Image 1 (spheres, rainbow, N blue to C red):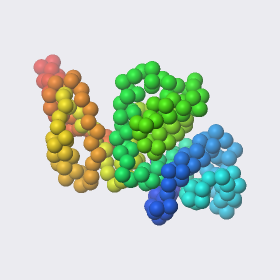
Image 2: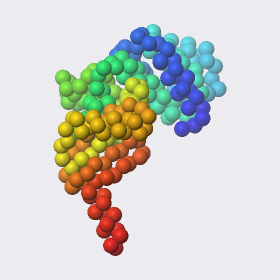
Image 3: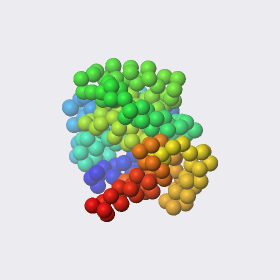
Image 4: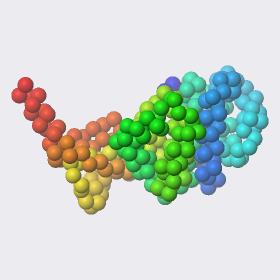
Length: 262
């Protein structure tokens, strides 16, 4: 990520935070939809992502092209486009992040990151489903419709909006990477980090709570725990928090022993 993008993201996040209760489900949906429009229009994207472009001219384009979206979404989009981004791809990624954060902000009590994780686990366990939502051959409309059918009545509107957007505009990313990215953003918007805890068998909620408390104390922030059961671990526990892995599983220790014997 370029330095210009880091500054642009900081400004855009601050603008979102300053809107408070004005942010709704529609705000996030419309921002993501605007990002998809820009992703498919080279001319429009080039005009709005150009770091040397006139800010007033960019606002005029936003107001003309996206006149149908609500005032809050249009205001946020104007902030995004009038900042300088390092690349056009990072410009699209910035719109995507602010859209996802807006959706997370619109439903602070929803377990959006947990729903995203569960969908990711379901996709990872089903190659046919992964192909259906991730193939370049399928149309955007068909993939979005499939997501709607799969998640209707099982997930929040925010989760459905996020997943629907991701499968329509993957920008070269695999579905697992997309969902992990979105889960991290949603948790961060709530001031939390996401830890994936893998055990060989089921553990009690009390045990997960104690582990969560210990990890929160270690890392100095609240955590959301996503629990995965993998019998291949044999015993013990494996924790992944971002790029850091704490592996206390029996399988890991056995593998270390094999390496030492070799």
